[in-house]
Length: 259
Image (cartoon, rainbow, N blue to C red):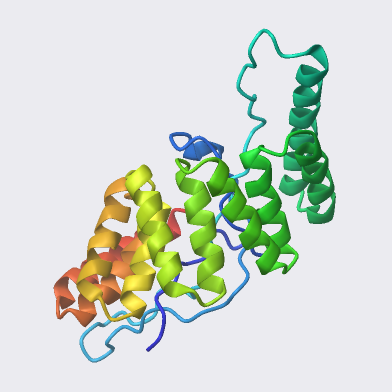
């Protein structure tokens, strides 16, 4: 069975993979979309029923939302001055790491995140972003450990779960990936990317009705996403709704052309 996948939203984006970094859940406009890596096939349309069988070349992409420097919680007044200085320094190193991550200097980013974590071992965002950098260098095991630690420190951040789901999926732990996407959506039911990614998993396991529901949610939250329309079109075709599939393909082409 061919896999449903995401489409490449911008042809000029270079090819390197990344995952979604932590950010405030309500500010997706702060997220920086970076690079694709693993080429996969799209859901196959049924050519005997659909006049439009190929709209785009599809590619597996998950965006990395780079975080802006986030201030650490204010410490109690009785904390020693040296402790406050260390926390400020940790935040400074973290901010430097984020800049290097944005520039795709992954080794440099890891170096800065290491310094931040040396000063503040409980810095969940630094673990998350170091995991992003490690994943991009091909160190999936270390990346997964960093996401485990980030979630241990902050189990209410949806993007931590979404990042771990992405890594688990690339490591073949599909059940673990699905469980993490479920948790991400439970925490933040307004994250279109989590529905979209979960829909891909449901489709690939033959759960077309559940996949359709996830693509419906994706489009409801982001009505201009060409990828979601395309994947919903093919899902509808497999469920026998050829008219709905054709309409979705037309919408997909429309929004693809508008990019």
